[in-house]
Amino acid sequence: ASAETYNEAKIIIQKKTSIPIGNIMISSTHTHSAGSIQNLYYCEADTSYRNRLPPIIAESVFNALGQLRTAKISWGAVYFPQYVSCRRWYMKKGFVSENPFGGIDMVKMNPPQGSRFLDKPSSPIDPEVGFIAIKGLDDKWIALLANYSMHYVGDIEPNTISADYFGAFGIQLQQKLQASSEFVGIMSNGTSGNTNSWDFKQPDRYPIGYYEKTKLIAGDIATAISASLAKAVWDSKPDVKTAQQNLEVKTRKPSLKDLEYARANLDSNASEDIRRKQNDYTQLYAREQILLHEYADKVNLPLQAIKIGDGIIGALPGEFFTETGLALKKSSPVKNYFTVCLANGWFGYVAPPGQHKLGGYETWRSRTSYLEVGAEPKIKNALLNLLKKVN
Image 1 (cartoon, rainbow, N blue to C red):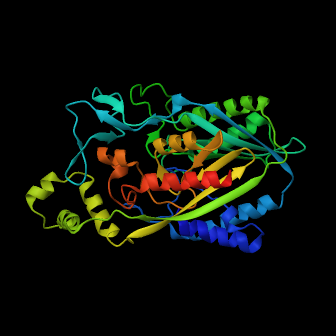
Image 2 (tube, rainbow, N blue to C red):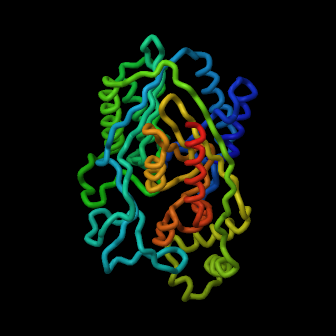
Image 3 (cartoon, rainbow, N blue to C red):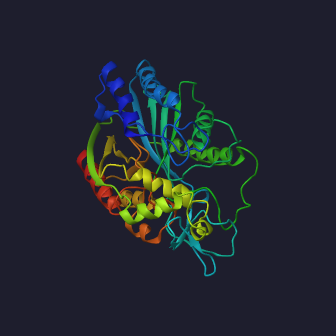
């Protein structure tokens, strides 16, 4: 969701409660089985849904405040390397990774599974599922927020509204913990812009059928977290501190030459030579250049850090790579740390500069990837400063 959508919800919440806007973090999860609230590619936003969303988000906060009670918290982590894969691959000689701008990429996003051309992934994965558990002082469950750096699962029946494995996790965790219906189990998107759950080398190892893979992954993670909580150390007086920053970042817009190329590819009277060279993406990305040309030269990205007890949550407004998340964990001033992405806004994919050099879908200039090539280190360093500020 856009920062504007989130901000509308935050304003409603602040007006009707005593919660400062700076203390509110709202994030999305990634699913391909829900309504759209933004215009992207050829998909138009459902404006009715988008207009209803901020009040609905605010209502969930009001409901939570109506059940407010003294709580204790515990941080923890479990590890699932078997369910997350880098989806950007180097390919062996003989495989050509064309891009919609007439060039050749060094990596391929979501290459053919089981292909003999598979060489190696371009990035490491982050197998950690970090979480913060919340109970009342009476030991009754309130909520648990988990975080996994995996895009989504996607084995959803067509034409079905579904929260994907994020929703399945909440349901299964409630059952595993034997919590009441008031319990809220949440799985958030970590730094997963370059990952998914596909096993490119062994594509047949997952169960087939709608929701089967979703249930497997959600269930296994819920089971592991539930078991780990037997050794939880609870903090009944956790301190809470937040810090925020709006970071100005340049956008990556098409040059005049890029626009000429795009217009030529959109021209119905284009030469036979141009039409022959067009692939499925050419016209789509040509259209993206025309639309991106109207974007502002700079944008302000909302960054946030929230410290609760001896752990910190970082919030980034986009789809960042595992390299970013792993670097933040390594440099974090505390052991218990994870990054929630798609938080407080959405500014597309934010690839590290080295990944831009390799090309691939996540780097193709469009409304889904339009920040300057050097944006990632600037954002990462700014968030790291916020983590140190709240510690």
